[in-house]
Length: 350
Image 1 (cartoon, rainbow, N blue to C red):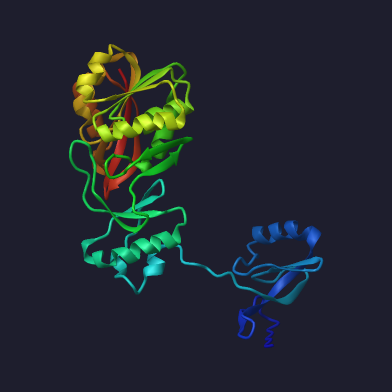
Image 2: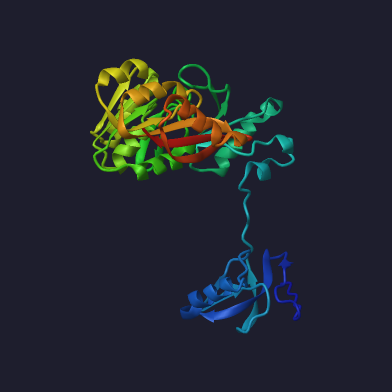
């Protein structure tokens, strides 16, 4: 047994190579006082979180960083092994560091990651590393194209995990079944959907244009006292999933229509208390339609992508060009789309 003592040093990190233990200064505390003493040590920043506290008989030994008025002894402690928690830590020296992906999005149990062309030969390693770091992830897919086409979809390539693209995403007390390759869905809008929920009053009749797999209609139905929610989606695959999600979440006050909003909405013969337009790139083109099915006091939420320098003037201009008397209620940044460019929601009444 190797034992080294330095009385003048409050916490000694000398490893015992035989036992893989570290001799440390620590406080000796009766078990019945352990919680209160631990709390005081933490509050005074004198609790050493790098080591595992020791329990022997009726005493607990807490490793400390520096001197204290409490009884101090020396004990052997096991050091807590810090496992890597990021791709950068694990892949350092294996993949060019400046090209290691910094982030990814998670839809259900599928991680979707962008891998630069320069490191495509490492994609399998990157995928397997993500699986090892995050036990909740079962599939890793890389972006194989940008969002494109009328349905705003993108190609995905599975690089690790189970061979599937269908998943169930959970947010705001709802479950949403979808395939993120064939349906547009943004998990990053979960907080924004929560914001909208908190604005809705009892008995509202709500229209959700471009309703996708149903995140807005179903989230509203599950979390508010809205009277009726109508969703319209042009993508037949997204609409199919939305219908499944109605059953999955057991909501009854939602009606879903598959088709072009310009054709479907006028035939509804309804006026709405609130209208959501989550189509950031071209939503302003549908403002005349939204106005047509509004009444005095209807609240509209229109989304847009804007550069930082254009917020809020540009989105206000887009609304006022179509609805000059619109009363602007709020303008909210609800996520960064790309460097310097943000997803913005403008809330206004007519």
